Length: 381
Image (cartoon, rainbow, N blue to C red; front, side, top):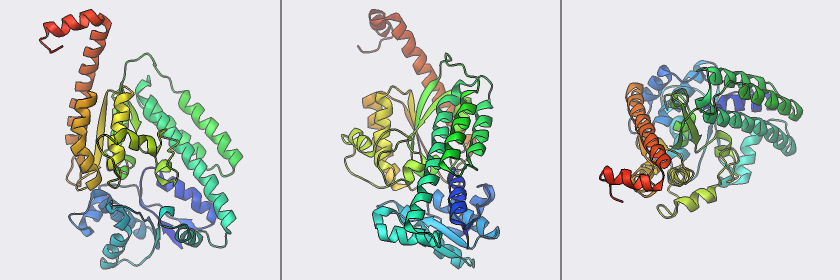
């Protein structure tokens, strides 16, 4: 059995580690590229969302590379993600590809089903052995997420552009071969030291921006045009609403991102008080939390026809007015061009910078001067 999965951020690194422990050969697809997207678009239904098209392209390239078993997550709830595996199977079989498909349903769909599927992927291992494998591998994956979170926050402060990105790649390569808990602990310390040793100017004024939206577009750099690195290089410190291990974990505590599902739902409640699938509710909740934390703006990313985040998009203008925080939404499909995204992004960042400068100036003038300044400018008090 030669198993493959689609790309989604660091997912290939996680499965490379996991299958090395279970003794199954894992074949990662080539990195997602324009060819991947072209293949996905060629075989997918036109009305399907971008993540389905990209993942079908990933599977085709993995099959071309020698994989014979496709592993795909299932899902529950109104988001179409739960149907991806079935659609992918139909599309690829119709295109003439030969393969086995394994669908890993989340524990919420039933623990027995989940365990039975996991046992197929770890032949000859006991439940206890499988649990130990998952536990150690997941710990390593969570450390990778912590490294990524550090990079998103501190890339904006680096003195020499590109140093953080280089250090991050080095840090991931250090932690990748670690297998035992002791090796993982040692590798994590070394990896964080590498990131912390990047020269930074912490007195530099930077913008702080939150990124919310649909999880696949947020986590897969190809689909979001790698805007996180682009923004970091522009001097923007980022908070992201989802990390891979938080999304995979059945726990609702989200230790990497740092805000639990219940806190997110509580924040969103005045505007959206029930689950609408995907990240619809979290996109609203996170935006409000980011506004309360004093972030300068919020960027929402989601694929065209994504119902949950379309609901969120319809609510966010009111949130923007109520909390006085600028928000920009990007709807992405295969027709979206990087130049258009970057142009709008630069305009948004310029607006945030100008707004922050004005607010800082008024704050420096003091309350009375603030009122006089507003009076002079004709603004309502």
